[in-house]
Length: 376
Ligand code: THG
Image 1 (cartoon, protein in one colour):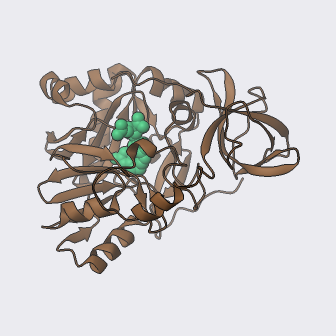
Image 2 (image 1 turned 30 degrees about the horizontal axis):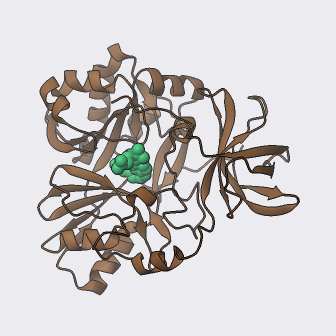
């Protein structure tokens, strides 16, 4: 099997050495940085995340910082979600669109100060995008990538562990998507109740990259009695939980409504944002190519992973692509996510799918969520 080369061109996370010491077995490349995708035992990693607590190096979720008198105006213009009323110490999940209304990123946006925002991005070049938009608009802002690296603590025991480290009072007062600066043994961190799983937990935005391995070690030591171990954004859990993996679940010509982010797209609000008029035009016609959940008819032995999107057809005509698949331990079945042309997104539609290894399987569209429940 081919391997990804480790070299100088791709950036290392501040937690990189720790992940190597912890036995990382695979990386992906995300925002021009190596990001761990496994530690060699997927079943144990899933169990740790859903039963106990896991520590994830997600430093590759880089921050695009907007700072200056026009920060709020620019943050709103690049976000398809209404940011009105976003207070310091709060965050919102917000799709970003291009001028054609296509989804180009789905970050978490944190307001860290009066005139300072962090756009915590998924994998696409938003530093270039936001800088260019700011320049064209003539905004009085500085757009930069600060020394900020998220480390996620996810799992049902994350809350107990955080109480012990940060104090019960602070942790109890920290609502979902609330954040506050804290200090752990002299290491500066912004603690946020967030993360790319529905198992509950936190993200620690480290603001001094020289302290990455020390922070990792401190968390591992504090979590020992909770059964902590290394983890990473977890494909089975996130498919069960219905969290979008932008660019993996959708092709480049997908709008946020098709991507299932309608609830976070503020077309009715009295705000302007990039892509708004294009989206309003698009929505005059029926939805074109929505993303849907699919159950696949195969057992664990045949439940292969999507290295590439798999064609999905009805009566010999291709109607879409099955883009991700996983064996769900929780549901004891093979599940996936597909992007299909309407009206083939209707629940109950049966798709003929050819897998990467040439296996012919059937997938049934379902509008049932696959159902992992947030515990906190
Ligand atoms: N944390 C941080 N940055 C990120 C991610 C993250 N950047 C990239 C990527 N993840 C962006 N994608 C998502 C997708 C979903 C959520 C967060 C980031 C998420 N969704 C919740 C849900 O769907 O239930 C809550 C949405 C809400 O209610 O506002 O959390 O994970 N730092």
